[in-house]
Amino acid sequence: MPDQSPVFLRIALITTVMALFGLFSAGSHAESLSDQKISSFIESLKAAQKLEPEFEELDDQMDAEDDGAMPDFSRLFSDSLDELKGHEAYNRLDELARNHGFDNIEQWAATGDRVYQAWMAIEMEQQSPGARQEMNAALAEIENNPQMTAEQKAQMRAMMESAMGAMESASNAPAGDVEAVRPHLDALRAISE
Image (tube, rainbow, N blue to C red; front, side):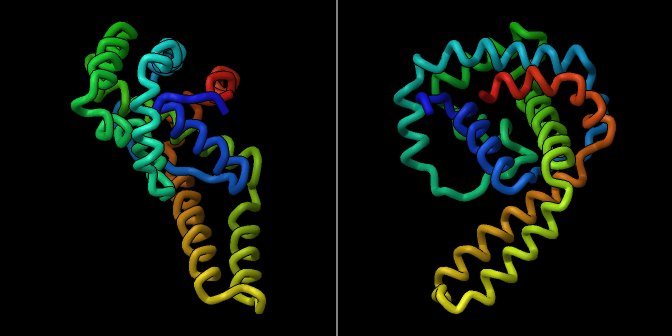
């Protein structure tokens, strides 16, 4: 995979986990997610991709600091912003967000969190309706595997439990957000490729 910005590295991680586990998360939000806001967010991501070459050093630094833990998918963009504070990339993204109709970078990130939550809930629903049962079965296989050490079982159990937690969170995606995002699936999928 080509070098990616921190936000897009997270997107790539989401796509990978989605393909493996079919999961993801959500939260509740008072304001409706409008078609225009979703479109503006998608356009801003396209513009952000053009900034990637300028921040390769930051990508390398964030890769080195990555502990391999599964991110909180309900705060994917907001958490990424927290990591960018104090870096030039933060200011550039703030300008980009404002240029795409957002009041500030925090509003942009909150919109991104909601869009991606809803998208992951849709993907989970479409790609793997039996994912919970499959994961429970895989967890039982891990526990009953005599060839695995206790340490290996603990690592696999932690991964599976983390994935199951994310899957549980995805089931909480606001129905309004899910329906608002549904017409934008092709555009979102194109960005993540």
